[in-house]
Length: 190
Image (cartoon, rainbow, N blue to C red; front, side, top):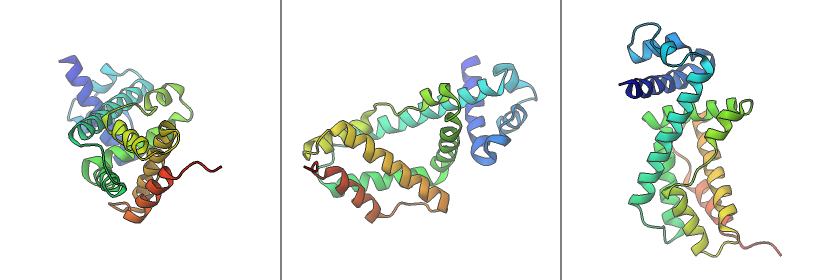
C-alpha cells in the first residue's frame, strides 16, 4: 500500500505543478489534490525537495512507458512523411488533455533542474523504443552520425512542442516538422 500511496501522491503533485506552477507545489496542495487528510504528503515526502524528486521520477516513468508502448507498436517509418505523421501524433498527445498536463509539469521541472543536479540527472533523455524508431529511420536514410542527428531532431521536436504549448496551441504545424526531418537527413557539409 505504501508504494501505491507514493504513486498517488506523485501523480497528484504532477497535477498541482501543472496547474499552479512551482510556487503552488506544496504538501497541503498535494493532500487536497489527492483527496487525502492534511499531513499525508509530508508523512511520505518530508521535504519539498523529496516531493519534487518523486514527482520527476513519476513523470519520467510515465513518459518512458508511453514512448516505449508507442515505439513497440509502430514499424520503423519508411518515408519522411511517415516520420512526420508520428511526430505530429506525439505533439498532439503532448499538447492536449493529460499529455498537456504532463508537458506543463515536464517543462517546469526542466527549468528547475538547471539549479538541481539530481533532477537534471533524472530528466536526461533515455533510450526507449520510440527513440530507437527515430534512430533507425535516420540511419536507414544515410544521415551521418545517426545518434547525434536523432538527439538533435528529437530536441528540436521537443522545442516545437514547447513553443506551441506556450502559444496555447494543440498541434505543431506539419511544415515545421517536415523542415526538421529534412534538416536531420541532410548530408554532412564538406
